[in-house]
Length: 331
Image (cartoon, rainbow, N blue to C red; front, side, top):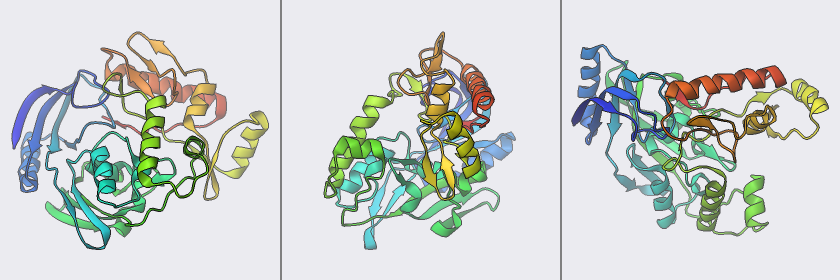
C-alpha cells in the first residue's frame, strides 16, 4: 500500500486539470482496502475510489478526500465462459483479452477509457451494447457494513449509465467483476453509425467489429492523452411521446432512439443546435467534432469546465425545455 499526501491529480484523471488530492492511496492487495477505509475515517474525509479517472471532474483546487486506486490486475477465466477481472484492469485491454481467448460480447465496448471497476459503476455502453448485459456478479467492499460482499446481477440495479454503486456513491469499493460471455459470436449491429461503417454483413467476426469501433471512435472523439476530456459529459435525455411529438413539430429532423415507451434524444444534437459545438474560451471549451465532449485544451480549472457545463444546461433548457444530466461524476 502506498500513501501519498497532497499529490497532483493532473495525470490521474482524463480531464488533466491540476487539482490536488489530500491523500491518494494505491493498493495492490484487496485485503488492504479495510485499512484504507479506517484511514479515511481517522481523517474524517470521504473515500473516493478512482481507476484511471476517466469519468471525473474535480471542481476545487484541493480535493479534501482520500482517493483509493486498486492496482490489482489479474484476469481469471472460469467455467461456463465466465471471466473474472479485478478492478485495476484496463477496460480496453480486457476487451482485447476476451476476444483473444475466443470469448465474445464486449467488442462493441472497445476503446472506452477507464478500468474494469468503473465499467459497472457507470454501466458503460456504446454502439448498442451495455456492460450490464454481461455482468454476472460483482465483489465489493461495503463501507456501511464494513465487510466484503458479493452482489449478483439481479441486485446491481443497472439502468442507463447507472447502477447501485452510482446510486450509493461512497458506500462501495468495487474489487472485481465477473462477466458471462459467449464462445460463439453474436454480433450487435443495431447502431446506425457502426452498421454504415461495416456494411450489412451479419457474419462479420467480433474482432472486425472491435477494429471498426476503434476506428470510428478515433475519427470522432478526442484522445484524452492529447486533449483533456471525460468522453460524453451528459446523458442522452429521455422524454415521453407527447413531449417528443411537440418537439418534432418544431424540429422535424430531430434524431431519436426508442427506449421502451420513451424517446431518447442525443444530447450532442441538443447542444449543437443550441450553438455550443466548437465553443472555446481560453483553454477550455466544447470539442469541434463532437458537441457532447467538453475539453481542457491546456491549463483550465475544473471549475471552468463545471461553469461551462451549467451554461450549456441552461441554454438547452431554455431552447428545448429539456434539462441535461451530467454523465460525469462531479466532485
